[in-house]
Image (cartoon, rainbow, N blue to C red; front, side, top):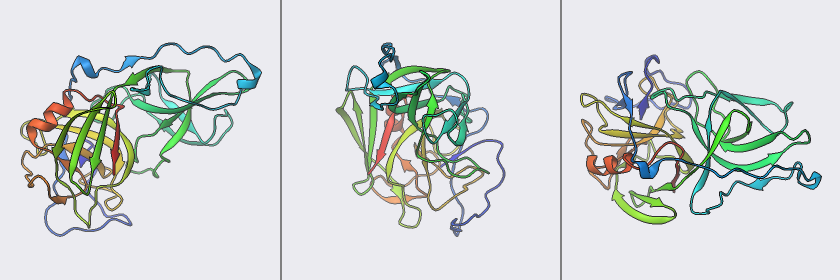
Amino acid sequence: MIRVPGHGRRRPSSPVRRLAGPLVAVAVLASATPAVAATSSAISPAPALPATTSAARVGAETPADPPSRTADPTVVLLTPVAVRTAPERDAPRVTTIAARRPITGVRTVLPVVRRTTDATGRRWLRVRLPGRVLGSPAPPPQGWILEQGTRSGVHPWRIVVDVEARRVTVFRDRVRLRSFRAVVGTAETPTPRGRFFVEENVRIPSDRTGGPFALATSARSSVLQEFDGGPGQIALHGRDGIGGRLGTAVSHGCVRLADREIAWIADRVAPGALITFE
């Protein structure tokens, strides 16, 4: 799991399970740097959408499919954004998303699920949200944000983690490229299931465990509400200083890969990529 620098020590919080023996986390310090993905993984700008002028289209939700259905629509936050329960300015606010991520400081990139325009002409986006942070309740998986203060893009990469088979498969433009054996969570600290996304792509210092890279996801442990000073964040990472035989279920929820294989993924997959744990 990812440890965010500056947080306190691990403390149990219902339904946290106390574990006997040492807990191993991916310790990401302030000196950690964002991994630089290859140019082929860069998030491409999305073509401009036509203005919504027809009264019949006001309030109608439309899927956020990009012109190429082989890539997933994303949005980059240029400023902090308020997340609301509905695409209305007076709808309840559920959380605020920072414009930059806490570990690497890179711009926040969110997958876009749907788009709509309200009666005043404001454009709204339904987006997938980052996971819980320490000291705050867990946000819903999705919410509505104003399009203002964002930049649209598309992301060609997807990752699928087959927990039962203990394999990670990487796709580009919906085409399967590589599949790797992996270590997944135990029955007591399982790898969560569902659809999430990559929040950050982190280069782990050589003197820290879990390197050489980690893809910090929006998934959080359902058992460990706090882990080594972090929010129980689930990551795909290496096995430096941790070990674990590939194809086994011995982690605290994270997915471990051979160092060369996580390096291959980190070199290509940027924040905003969809990741499914099934």
